[in-house]
Length: 124
Image (tube, rainbow, N blue to C red; front, side, top):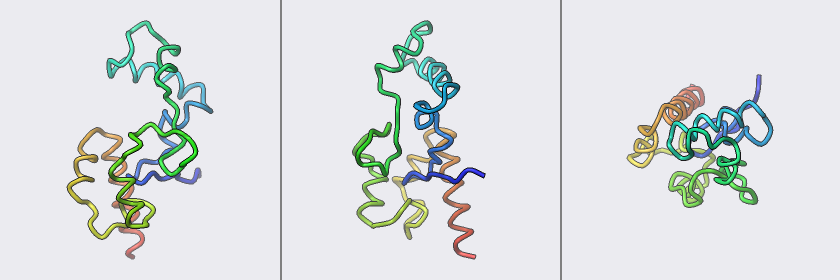
């Protein structure tokens, strides 16, 4: 079983194509389809157009590398300020800021499920 690499928001980086793209050719190819679906590149632009958008991510806790999310991520900043590893460790979880994040796509909902599951496991 592969160990989770958990972002502050609860996303498992190992499941993220932006994180895997540098190491996994299949992940890189799926990024082209994803960028096309978002309208960020044209239908026939391909990998070169994606590469111009610097699609790599080293995870939000890697301060020396790049990460895809805004460098001013309010969830990461909040975790840093509270000196916690992720939002699931917060006594205010799931706050308004987190719920705005969680309601923005299926992978964000899955991140919330990870954190809820982790919180439940830790409280047993």
